[in-house]
Image (cartoon, rainbow, N blue to C red; front, top):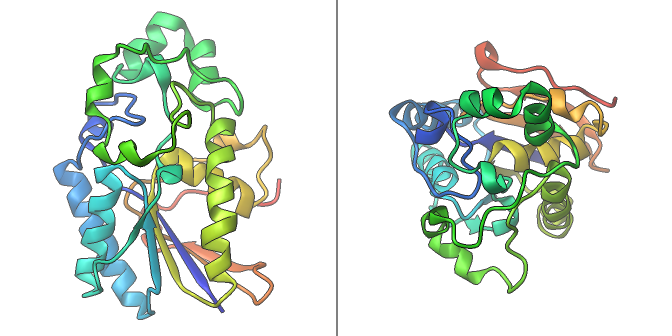
Length: 239
């Protein structure tokens, strides 16, 4: 029986500043480091073997993963995949969320932030934020780097990676740890828990709180639970 542990990286410096981060490669805040360390301790208490680890190209997710692996005295070998990057927020990148809501109105703000298939306007090709993207992005195939994304766009890059890499190893009874981002994980939750296009905008994923999913032999979910119960969020299952 395989297990999949999904964790949204600990709080980042831009999370703390309430800014749209997307593909900008910011680090963890002090709180985020503490969340990653606590996650490592909680995973250690499960007393299970982590066979394979995956993360994105962004250092906030990588730091969360390496902190967990170190806390568990595990090999620091892990797999990075750009497909697990956070959603690209286009021209919203770097903006304060509260100020943006006041400027464009709550209705449009909700559409850009949480709708299934409405992306924000694209990031300008001369944006200064491009220089703050991960240097690992240089390995992404030509033409694949987006200038904006909806959650649907994010889902369309996350799911082939899940099918080709993660699911394949779950089928081999491997225990897998994934350190990623709010929206790349939202895409995975949508698929795994069969959340509808209309309901997915209600899903909240806490930072630095591992979700453990246990599967039966046919990869049907047997049970799931957050390790930090005090910070757990409801999961909209099979809507």
